[in-house]
Image (cartoon, rainbow, N blue to C red; front, side, top):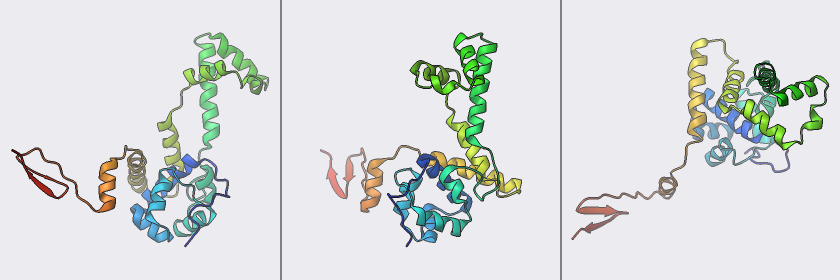
Length: 218
């Protein structure tokens, strides 16, 4: 059985790694239990990994590469594509979007802070102002984070492995659904009931059956 979690490994971009594991599962057409079985690990570990609660170790990543042809560089960092082809450089794209926001605010809105930022960028002195909290707040306001945009880029990079447009559309939809399914709030009571094999049913009728016991309402 491969090393499932290795605390000695420095795994970068843990949240992104969880997202990319979801993409591989969706692309494989397997459910999490089947995916875990192919890798020789527990279904519980895979479930925790795709939620970002556990960091897979090097052995786990090697098995994923062998079983599904996934690029380890892509798994760890998101660089390139799922199967190693060149894709969008997300960091560069974020920098471009940020510079567009600064330029727009400086030129269109004549904002003095944005104008000062443009000068710092041109002179390579932006790092000197990086510790200023007001600057960070300003950038957040003019160029807020867009998690859906980042997801779209990850999905694009992750599905360049096929030129079949129909397959791309099906896999992209499956991956997007899997991404949000993994982030839905957990019904803790239902989850506990499933784990224990106990059926808990509550009815508001004269004859109530709760946790396997029958009560007559007087």
